[in-house]
Image 1 (cartoon, rainbow, N blue to C red):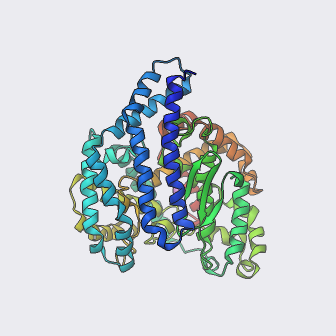
Image 2 (image 1 turned 180 degrees about the horizontal axis):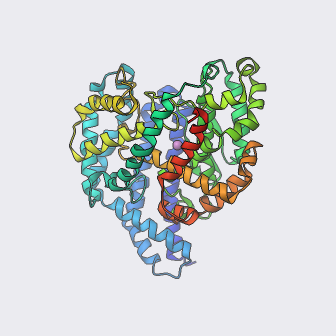
Image 3 (image 1 turned 120 degrees about the horizontal axis):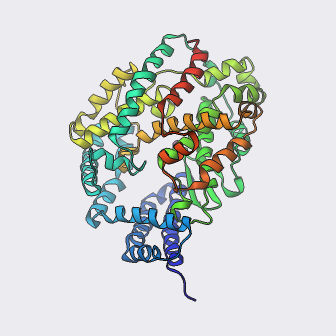
Length: 498
Ligand code: CO
């Protein structure tokens, strides 16, 4: 039987996906159930599979199959798969083998160096490695090529087409509109939050969270949730999209909002046309930034909303009569939306969050352009926290050592977190218009229509459109920061009486 070149290309891409999905299973296991002594060889096993996936993808065979298949009679989606795969191929081919190896070696030990430095609160244990990584990332920007700024080349990895010029424009708005509003909020008296830190049984926390995750539409027959030190979402293929959760028995927010966040990522993955387009661009998420828009829309715009808690707090209160018996719905809603400058990004509220990102962006951009050096990072970090949040970290563990990203070479990644929130606000505004009963639906814990809207307008398209295109399709324009600002003013203006 003669297979078309497109069929052969599809097989080749499936092989790449099989290898990287197998590596993802090992990574998930490492974070969940692997015994401690498995660690040394596990890193090697994952590296082997990842290298094999890379080699199959950048092989001459893949390049040839793409070229030949493009000459065949194709459907629109087949052509899109080929053209996007070609773009990825050209990009991946730019990396010299020696560079790939050097980067792999540097980042393989990254986690351990970073973790030790953070545990011992000693930046000097991490800085030699970080210097190496920054040097390699500067080199990577050169290898990939850029027009205006080397950092553009690195951000492109996480959001195609994102540039310093674009992100500067967005953060100009953040500085002009959000930061002054934040100041107004912080000048007001704080809502009551004592109950957030009372005792909450872990099992009962999960029971309530799971109930909500199911209501969102997350398919537990095509996924599962397990405890892990860090919450994340990972995909092994169509029909297996998993999330991890963690809980603090003395801090209510830790499990619930992270579980919703990860389930939001999971719903996006479960909604992609992955079965028909396994290992292909049409079966993949459009970008990291857009992925984050999905998780944040669920976490913040839906599950931190007044409508949701007005409807569902009584249920939670029944689960925790001792800890929440003396708390009103209004108090709970305000408490879980407390705005307060803090040191740790992952615990930040919706407003101060973007100051955390802006600081990281400034530092990364300066490191890559070479206007600052790694040794300057702790000093600049602390100065910027003072400048933008009015607080100064007492040590580097709660300062520049808090995030894992630099240890794996994830420079250019942070801006996607802010973009995710801003995209989410824009999507939510449009969704509200097209589902006039959305508030009532959220109030009654019914998310079917919201999910259907996301599925039809976003998930189904895979990588067919870029972020700018998809936003324009659904809202009539590319990213506008004003959507986020309107959302923030309305919500926090009401909570804080501004
Ligand atoms: Co996320």
